[in-house]
Length: 123
Image (cartoon, rainbow, N blue to C red; front, side, top):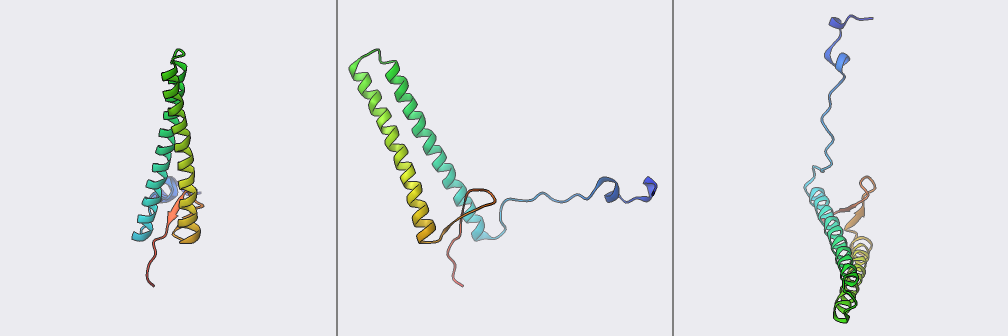
């Protein structure tokens, strides 16, 4: 058994290693990661906006007091929100089919669960 004064700092406190960065060092991979992140954020915001618009339509319907014009406006809001959600799902499906399956630009990143873009390069 060594005395405390005979041990090195690493033996006492452990080795300190720098944090692991999630950002790739290659420029084309970094641009693809940032693009994938921004597209995911856009889809999340679009989904939340459509959901909020539908909830506002439901609130308008509840607070309409039976007035026919207010009920029709509320129904139109709810219909528009549902159409918006359908469009968002269709765009995501089309985006993944065209960008991923046909062009091979989009790859599924198993580590983060998101999309990773691989920009075409000349070799």
